[in-house]
Length: 289
Ligand code: ADP
Image (tube, rainbow, N blue to C red; front, side, top):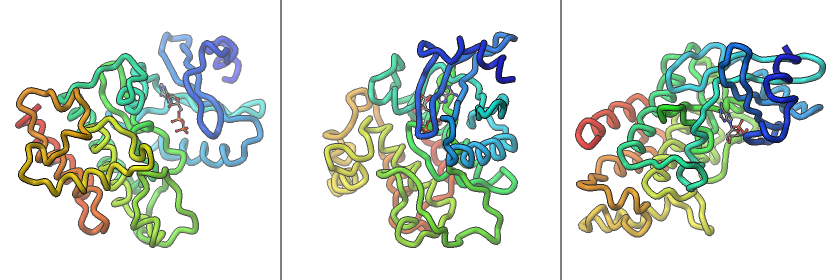
């Protein structure tokens, strides 16, 4: 109930605040049974928040997967809108990559994060019934649990797609700049392949630790340019590689970076499906992990 949630977050005190988004704030809380939770609290009167919250509840109550962040409950009481999630003590992938958290992700861990989040997305695309397109895949929507298992989060923009709806023109293109599938942007036709594009961008972040757009430069374009230097070691990617990755003993980047570049192909039809990405990453991890 509202009163319980109020109690377990110290009356939504600032010290319990862990983040904020367009809709409002996220608080850390401890439920009476000792379970740690993250509580997303919509700003009062944010109508958009209301709609996105409903979407999120509807979707999350259908999905159960190791690599998708779990909804513990929700509360619509006294004009409040709150979603209660399992708490992810190691924050977002973006925070670790930008050095804002204590988590140190070596190359092996980065490969596991890639595989975990790919499995979460493949599940949404292929096993959830009906399928779900996430629509906002990015490193700040990938959370890390206590074992550094990656979980896909933030379903506010997601969409259930029945077969009849698939590929239909939507009226509004949504997503995050730098991750947004250019084909979806041009045609406004939403398919699972838009998530594949965004996931490819996340893979490039795992190599470089850079944001998709930094100092006006698009990481996708930079890597594409560097990959023309085929005969150089690691395709001449050394200049954009995170030192943690660059100094990995026996680093074999070829399979990973080629997979990432297939994911960010201009044409969705050329991109692999998420379950093909999962298979490819499993092979890479077997050989190099
Ligand atoms: P936005 O809508 O802006 O993407 P999110 O709902 O993803 O915001 O969450 C905002 C911030 O709250 C995140 O960046 C993250 O730091 C934190 N957060 C969200 N969910 C959790 C969770 N389950 N466990 C721990 N921290 C979380």
